[in-house]
Image (tube, rainbow, N blue to C red; front, side, top):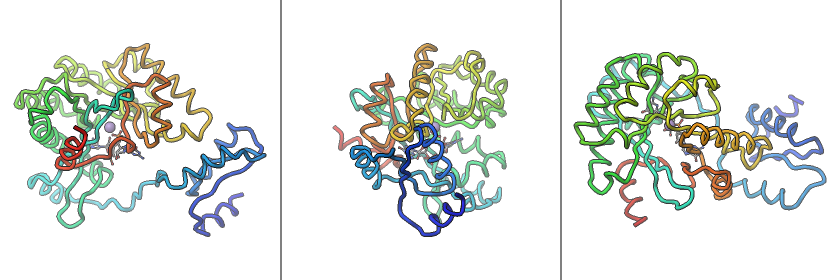
Length: 328
Ligand code: G
Ligand code: G
Ligand code: MN
């Protein structure tokens, strides 16, 4: 089996589909294993081959699939390089809208960090977040982004009050006991009510250090900020943690949405998460929506808010401005 996989991979085929008479759950597992081997697998199809299903698979040919991140591409930045980039304002906010699945109107903006590197161009967070964190500079970058986002986007009167703004926070930056207060001060400086601001913490980190999150998250909630568990479903936060931590939102990891059309168990898992969210009175947001089908299905399953390339990609402030103007 593995030799065959290697041969297929080396042949550089653009895409593959698996055809078999095995049971669906087993085919899902086989497909996941093949993808983990780096194969560009469109999905599987049962035998005898069903024409509608084949069309569905072929339609997916044009879609981009998740390419594993190239860890080697991340350069080992020195503290001096990172500090200089901070001093010269090279870290800038990009914005990705969230939208109401019903009305398709914007429901918020997530701030995503980008490094406008003078030689390398615009770098994504996987190139610099870990480095900033290990040099204890992530808190500074977070505050700089927050300040720019409030000044640049919410500062314009026509955005004010219409948008919820979401900011990603690393759990480790909560070690700095001053950070919550600094966030409060920045919001106050821009006369923005913290109720309009959601802070996203990734589930993996929340699950690992619940006590660290508890104090800071409570402090932030008391000041009015809303709190979201990002990438929910991948980090194994226990149900006990969900009860104990003052979160207001579950942001469902995009891997569940990505396999909605292809994996049998994705739908019941999504239904269970949405049900849990509604019972805990947590707002639920589905991320990574790339197709109209997924959008309609999520809405039918009771999800209200979404985010993904189907609606809008992360954009810089100028592009966001044009995007908004084109929609009115
Ligand atoms: O931006 P991209 O679209 O590539 O985001 C990749 C990851 O980086 C996401 O998981 C997001 O949570 C994280 N990320 C983006 N911006 C920030 C940030 O300002 N701070 C932290 N801690 N993580 C961020
Ligand atoms: O972990 P966090 O939710 O903060 O991650 C946001 C990341 O997801 C960013 O890297 C962003 O570019 C990416 N992203 C946003 N929408 C989509 C989408 O529809 N598909 C995929 N594959 N990635 C998306
Ligand atoms: Mn996020």
